[in-house]
Length: 352
Image (tube, one colour):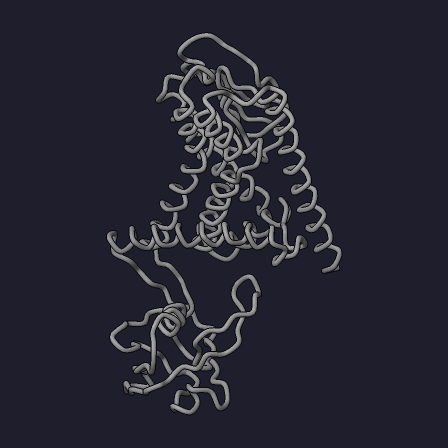
């Protein structure tokens, strides 16, 4: 069942990505010969309105084949206003960007659905108070529920951390203890901590940890729009930073996961709850959008760079340079895929 869920989720993400390219291409009048989900041998196809829609044997991606576009033949010239190579460079950039953009839109739609259905998060209930910490000295105790900090209403544990780090000076905590609400004045202290990339940082803390309790937050449609926007932007920034930290060597290459890891994450999420599956799908959709925008030849971002060069230099890169860079791009992508699979296999054997 997990494998089926993985294939369905991946197919939807690929379909939306390629649909972005397809719709933008058709908007500019470019003929699309093939819209494929998967690579390799064709399993099923149907021609509709001049495009062959197909499912292929290897379901780990997809593509749209436009008239006049062939990475193996960079100098390909196909006459007609409906040819990709005959439209303006900025129009090609829009077509290329439309795929990743469609993934960002899909993620936002999913996050909107999560907000409406009920987003789950850690409850703002204290599970542990560190000895001699500002919280302990002020009198906070296990099972206290933080309902407000100064004038900021608190609904989730995440909001506690944000409020503490984004304010200055002492804070007034309103805490529900049993049937009573009590107020405590706490002055956070700057302490050593780690961020999500395990980097050593300094931040304001009061010395509390969450209880293992979840809370479901239901949003109105207007609130859900804001939630969807914030989560999509937050996820995009996190993935961009993750790539940056990986290049800098802060995140070790052993952390790179392949299709096995992705499949396991999706499978585990589907077994947990439908909301968890939606959340993972949204995050992978953002991931797909961000990674495709990287300036690596053979990816959308690389092709965007080629077209930007054409706009600036007023000429296309030479066929030889285009081919060498594209081959280099494929080598980089192939190496990353092999590294991901290698890490996946290592994790499996390490667990055993």
